[in-house]
Length: 102
Image (cartoon, rainbow, N blue to C red; front, side, top):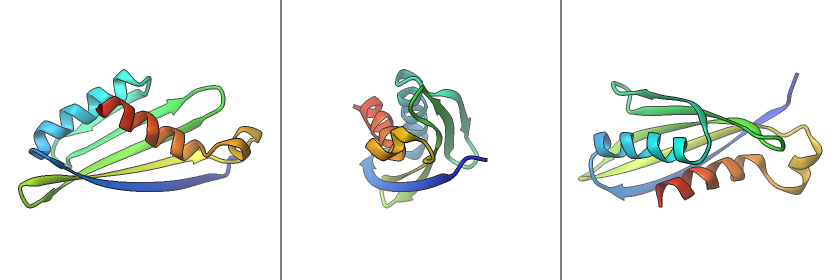
């Protein structure tokens, strides 16, 4: 059984949650995430990230922040391999997501 850990990051962006739900799903797909699933009623997006050195998933939750949207990205990844000693797999997953938003 793999040892998994989670890391969470938050950011506030201008615009509606509905608009950002689509942008987040597109960002994940463009960065090589698989099994991208949008939950319209919960304003959540989930996806898997499986590469040779990184094996994990991400869950993005969108909440209102006044007229803006707060994005909470929670990455969960396996940390019981030699590659995890060199570079955090959770930070890799979160970085890939943020790259896709640019």
